[in-house]
Image (cartoon, rainbow, N blue to C red; front, side, top):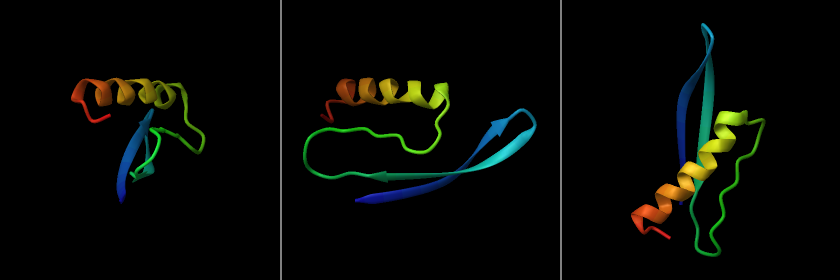
Length: 58
């Protein structure tokens, strides 16, 4: 399953377009961030994993 969301990010007073794509498939659990993520995005990886564990999804 592939999902795509268009959103924005704020950088000071600038608004940047962000395209988020998610693919879910059977197999070993994996979470990959591609592109040029800054520190906040990289930290979100751990928040998503924690949410997965709490929800019982994995």
